[in-house]
Image 1 (cartoon, rainbow, N blue to C red):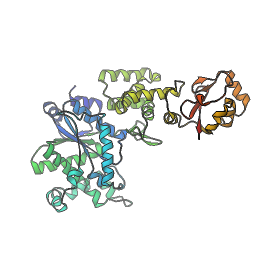
Image 2: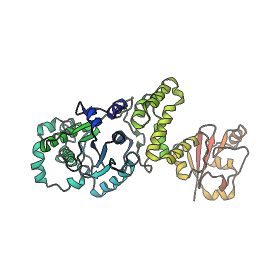
Image 3: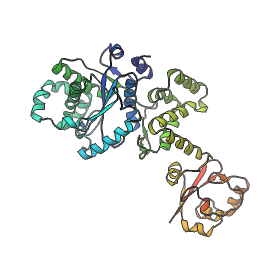
Length: 423
């Protein structure tokens, strides 16, 4: 398939500015850009659709520019917001931009002639003279047209929050970004989320007025779940690309636990698997949904893409640990992450030097209500220590720990209890 055909088949295209865009992308090599707000030192999976879109463009020979909004991030994009965001310091923007660059390297190639480049719009926006900007750029923007934009109109009529002049100028600054990139990098295309359509059109119009050049744009759809819930959110918050914020295990589990109805669209969005293979997984979802083969493959592909093969192996092994797999090699942090939602008891580490009977320790931790209950479970082969069956009334020692300070108790197939030994 051509790039345009693949983007359409995978569902990436929401709006395009030119009917012949597909032909243009096939005949010529474009430099295109997409902007990312440096509001945190990590992107979350809500940013993955535009990132994957840029990767598809690069795979077909086009050159991506990633614009970190160091300048516009000091202002804040009002699109999709109900109130003005907290403004970032320049120092925080620099820290966040460094984290974003590191993550994007998992998706994009930054080497060679078609290698992606990353720029910070603070480098040019913070050098602008206000009077010159208003004279040379501002005069090309109609207040009437700006007020007609959904993102502006909704906020202007919101009595509780309104919109500051600072945010009102955001569209001008983003349009100037497109002009600057056109002048300095021969950038002819902007892509972004569906909420960026008005900003893209504004930049195209500015380039046409001031340079008499053609520029184009495309938007990606808003990703939502079939039940209407917001994509990328869990009860604990965002699913981040930074492993320090969302561990590879939790990242893997997020994709593994998605509903059947969402999987076909998300596999097209978030993996590079070819159409024939994707269609086979869609068939398995229809005919053998209980096997969850598509969920496993998607979880593997996305986790490998974001965190690498080694982290994927650890995430799979950690998931297996919940169902009786080996716990060997998992440290305290990994075990606490895996078993974060099971009961945990803290006991004194010095207790282990006395080598107490395991049953006594489990009574103290509240795992059992009586010794008789514990003995009956041992006799029926239903008690496990670190996923090894407890066959006798053993004693607990330092060698009984799974990691430096943790032992994992399991009653039956699923009832876990963590014993954490602290100084």
